[in-house]
Length: 447
Image (cartoon, rainbow, N blue to C red):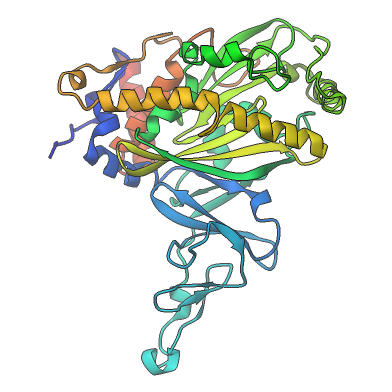
């Protein structure tokens, strides 16, 4: 068994040379420690409120390796409980959850309400109020997306989101720039792959360097209008930006229009869809002003929730899958709740062609992640760390955009993700993490 090095910030993530040890993808001990120090601490994406619209609706989700149930009770409140054994279906509607082994039953709010042979076996002495389903420490409904953490001392979700908020809002807000208004459609796609969860997360966090992998997709013209390219919603001149929130390991790739431009006709195969898209474009400018120039992109909210905020709008959770080289991917598609049905159906079909287990781009990426994962097991390969030196050290603040902004290509997003991961792995608690960070920054300032 491998003995872990004393410090993850020193032994596995090299902040001087901007490299990351391959052990973080293949080591069993590291994987097990992640479940405690990463997944049991941070905010994790659970699902969308549109999946549980009616009282009694539930959706079985995951938090790391833990199975959890997201429910809506009779009063319309959303709850989150650990509870694999009391629910064997992925989703549905029920008045009560019953354990199939001993028959204990639980209300939608997680309280224990039924115990077989309560009088005969327990002599009516079992304290039911102490044996309900384990509820998460904090729960947040952010514009319809449901997040939770097991750690009561974790920062609030909006504090955790930090400077990434502007870029994440492009995903969850309506296309016309009004707050919220999205819904999940088409169910949840789920599939497994033989790679570490971090490989996929870092790809969405900031890897703008791998587009050679998708040349075939561009050649066949998979855009929603049937034209060349994968997107139809970029207009006018723009600059490419890498946005990092290294305080919590988040990252995004986006763009910014250099000026206001008239709408470029798109979705020409269907006048109704084209009219909707044009209307949203001009309403977004009216609602957001200059911030409407910030284009949708791709990002990752640490640790494992990635999002695409252009069309198709999409969220994917890269769940750890029972070992360092196994992952389970869950994918949601989002649309505007008030969009015409024709628009929703068009975007659903485009999403299926573009991404997911049957989509062309995801097949490209999964092949790369699987190959890299297998290669990291090699004795010789394991001696060579991964290089994250594009844009080395170029973290900057921008006058009008939040986050650490780098124009052009950069790997500082990914390296920021691994740096925060190493901080979590080194820390005994959130308080310990912030104390160590403050001490380190003080010592670096003195040097």
